[in-house]
Amino acid sequence: MSEHNHEHDTITLVDNEGNEYLYEVIMRIDGSENFGKQYILVTEAGVSEDEESEVYAYSYTENEDGTQGELQPVETDEEWDMIEITFEAGFEALEGEE
Image 1 (tube, helix red, strand yellow):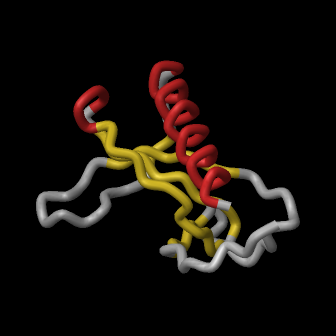
Image 2 (cartoon, helix red, strand yellow):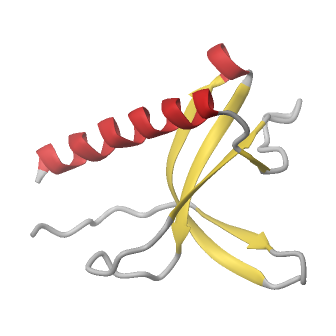
Image 3 (cartoon, rainbow, N blue to C red):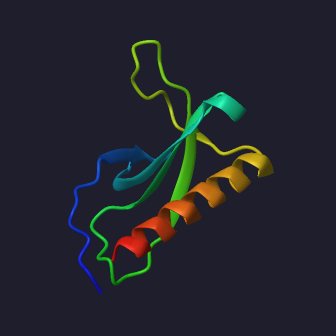
């Protein structure tokens, strides 16, 4: 197995109780043409590649200044289908590089 040697952006998510959790951004998806939103896929930071980890998807709309707006849950089956297809294609491309 080859090593995954590039840096990921990280974000901090805060739950309803104020607890902060660090996540790595593994993919950004431009869904503005079909859904008017951007999407971000994250996984828990610090998990080794040999361990399984959940991937979480969120939508957001960019602010006027170009910064990322507030993360929102993915709302429709059509959005989930687009995210799944894009994620699988990106994952297969990475596997092909190994």
